[in-house]
Amino acid sequence: MRIHLVFIGKTAFADLDSAIGRYVDRLSHYCQVQVHYLKAEKISGAVSEDAVRRREGERIRKTVGEQGYLVVLDQRGRDPDSEGLARMLGKLMDSGKSEIWIAVGGPVGVSAELLDIADSVLSLSKMTLPHDLARLVLVEQLYRACTIMRGEPYHK
Image 1: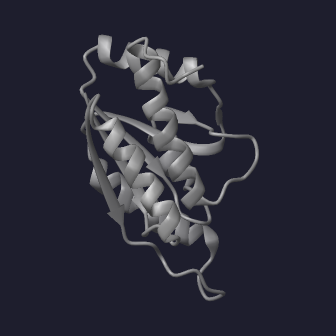
Image 2: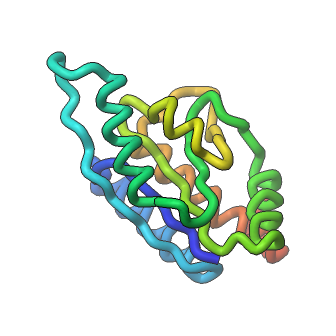
């Protein structure tokens, strides 16, 4: 299984970026992981937030293409617990899905068009998380899901 993480823009905080890298390294012991950083749109009064979401969503769509299974993070999505995420990943692997793409939008979220084409829409929390923090929570939960699938003691 290969997991592609699609992030809009660079991580703004070096400490968060370091922590994300740590969990990506840990996750890479269980599956192949590739991080795709896509250009963020400038947010200004001259361009609507909807236009920003559409442009960034189009970049995500072009990067993912027709390959694999697309998961988009959005606070209105399904919010599995850690075991539920592990079950979801296990089912995807069992069904032969070898390429899983997980997209985290930028500061203004993701477009309705991207949500429409997603195979799954998940939420990390009902609370709104800064996109940088969502990246860290995502990679830690993916690592945790892999340890759950292997019956390892990380998840208690």
